[in-house]
Amino acid sequence: MRQFSYDAEVDAAYVRLTDERIKETDTLDSGFIVDYDQLNQPVGIEVLGVSRLLPNILGLPEQEAAQQLVELSGILTPY
Image 1 (cartoon, rainbow, N blue to C red):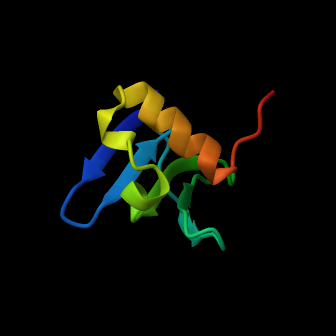
Image 2: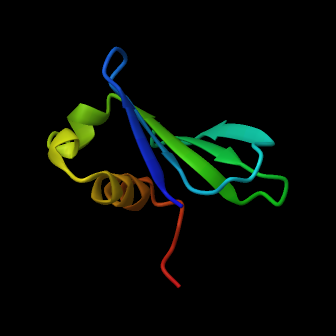
């Protein structure tokens, strides 16, 4: 259920990973902002200044853009 959204006014992208309620938010050293649920599992990832990190992100299909942000954040490891 990855949903990608982009706010051009602030050049921010958000990927919603699950429908779980957000319990807390943490800003990582990398600059990514991560929302967590009650089990401390990632619910969403936000990045400001996304066009500097991924210049072509707006030209990508939504699911591919979401996947690139998730991979760049490094918060989810492959199973």
